[in-house]
Amino acid sequence: MNILGIETSCDETAAAVVQDGQTILSNVIASQVDIHSRYGGIVPEVASRQHLLSITPIIKEAMKQADIAWNELGAIAVTNGPGLAGSLLVGVNAAKSITAAHNLTLIGINHLEGHVYANWLEGNTPRFPALCLIVSGGHSDILLMQDHGRYQILGRTRDDAAGEAFDKVSRLLGLGYPGGPAIEKAARGVNDSRYRLPRAWLKDTDDFSFSGLKTAVLRLVEENIDHNNDLETSSEPTTSSVKTEIAASFQRSVVDVLVTKTIAAAERSGTCNILLCGGVAANQALRKEMASKSTIPVFIPSPILCTDNAAMIASCGYYHITKGERSDLYLDVTPNAVIQQQ
Ligand code: KG4
Ligand code: ZN
Image (cartoon, rainbow, N blue to C red; front, side):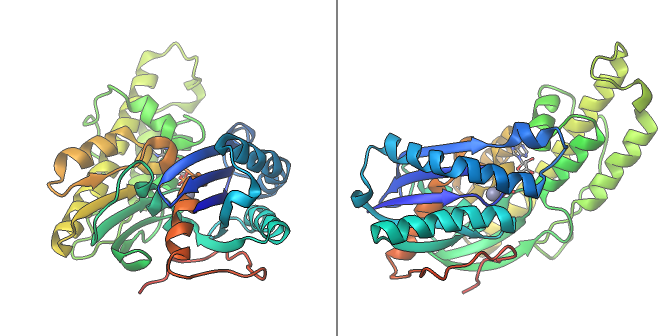
């Protein structure tokens, strides 16, 4: 079955066609990052207007690249939450219109569950039970996945999400938006143990906390960086090395906590696999550390499938539809949706 996936929950307008939940026929993503970076973060009103401009050409492009006609589609899977209400509405309404026009099956997908399914897209079929680490701009969750669609939430962040911490620290260091890729680039090849930053282990729980780390970076920045003399073009070499060493030490701290806690949860739960997903899983330091430290086989999607895309939504839709689930044309957006525990 060919499924058209549509994803507009945040600042990427994306459409993809996936066959039988695992084979990508097309995967088209229009990023708005250049537009939002000048504001230092996502402006929701701007995001939804931009989705409106992009959605039709992106869907047409996904169909063209997949080289299929509308009547060769079995269903449409669309993200209906969590995310920005105005952005979600654009994707959901586009999906409903196409569904009605071509008499297709419709399924609304939880964006976070979609992230998990990026692990089924590159010729892999993870085994259950699996331990999922979802690390994105809004979430840092550890889930135990017993089967398709069956989740138990073991841990989540108590304050900032991992991606949010990257974005905030990047702003503190004047490295730009989005923070994850900016910090990764600044930290590459740099001493990551110059500053010993805190790690919130939160013993006896699988929860995370990153706000203390962010505050510690703020202190370091105040003590060590003179922002009046801190232009990217500064001829002051120590300023830039202090910045990159803080970035590297911050990244080290986040990676240590994510890897250690995820492996501990997987070992305790006796899972067959560990599945990483979400934008922060694109981080090379995290990918390397997780792969080298875990004795349990680890799956990590290619970076382009870690950040927001519609192929993961189409894949997730396939597994719901094969269980007989459907949405109707009353499908609404749920900006605060959570993964249903079963
Ligand atoms: O999953 P995603 O694309 O969107 C959400 O669902 O939130 O994740 C976006 C987050 C941002 O906070 C971004 O800074 C972070 O993922 N991110 C990264 C990297 N690429 C994106 N964090 C660390 N290293 C990266 N290479
Ligand atoms: Zn996402």
